[in-house]
Image (cartoon, rainbow, N blue to C red; front, side):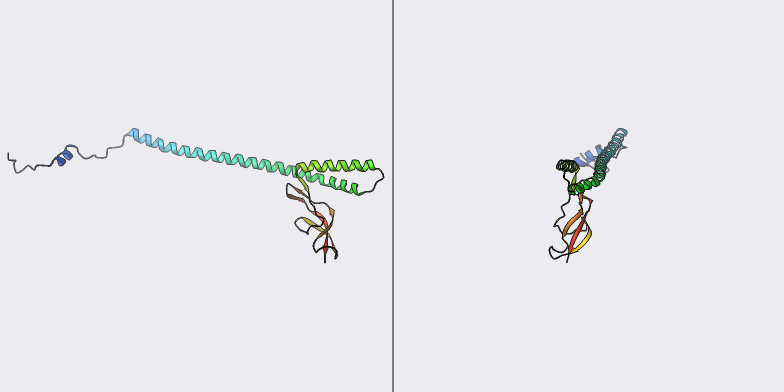
Length: 178
């Protein structure tokens, strides 16, 4: 069986390639295109939702922190308003009186007031014998003495206070110098 010269015989693989033409990229199916567009939109919306939720949480935390700071400063102002009253009680306790019951009553009122303000966060500063610190003390008098170390607090004219570990009022003190 002779084949005519004009015809060329193809191998089996080549014949299968001719039978199945190479895949030409067809135009994308509109349903697939819509699906892909919706998937991209969904991802963008989820990202936006997560960012908005994070923004909301941050705003909520910031507002809570500001509310707490406001309440703390309001309490600090109220406590600061009571300091002159504490000073008056301390001066009253320093006065000698023959009426012991009256003196005891003043002392009890002072202690209760100091205890109540302490629950709110007031802390009295201990200055006697401490090293002078211009951040905590206000020097009213400098005393030349050999009995104490240089820059040591000898006494206080007015007690200093902290409020929740923050300086509320510096102590007015007498300081030793050499």
